[in-house]
Length: 299
Image (tube, rainbow, N blue to C red):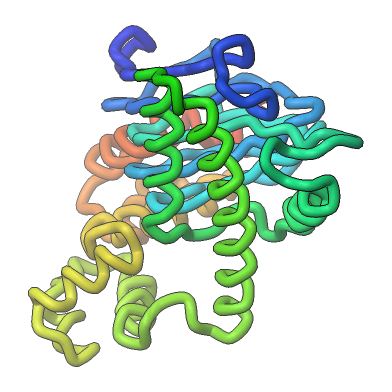
């Protein structure tokens, strides 16, 4: 596990933000699991929404009594007043962007009327679920906000205000669109949806992705390209992610040994499984079990 000093991080706090509605904005790259005791323990943003976008990797966050595994290409929202943090105070290897945004109680966001601000705030209040896949627009807007804060020019305040509004609209629009697509069963194209089903059914096997591609009627090249575009992971990364997701569920059952879980997920040894688990989750399976069997807070 690397130290916090090895993390690439840019964090801009309220006093330096170019919009009065931004409490903080930031970007970070964690090359290895990091025990981040400064930023991940239980905390609350009393009046701000926090919008996070995971560009690469995965993170394990909790809100209240609920645990969320957030994958690449996904947005994750916490609401004002919610207590939240990182599981075990650990940040998995990942790249992420975040912004803490406050809607004015009686006033308006810069550039919007009070009615427009209230409408947008109401749409944010109705976001459910809080974690959803994003299009390529969200990271572009985050990078623009970061760039304008890093290299301030005479136009930066106007550009930040315009980009922030664009980001807020994009978040609620994409969440509402995804919610409708999910209700209609249209999250992924049919071949990729079927591929995910086949992989999920064979987590205990040595899965050949060329075979999966053939079963869904795609060439290996087209399969890898489409899978990456739609899932934001390679098929192999998706397989490992799903195995680890199931492992976390199985580890909550104290009657199952780590070796039994490893073999049930297709690993030839518990050591290989534990190494993979720690690389992704940041802790050993036994350490995860100790905390998960108490509660998601690790208390």
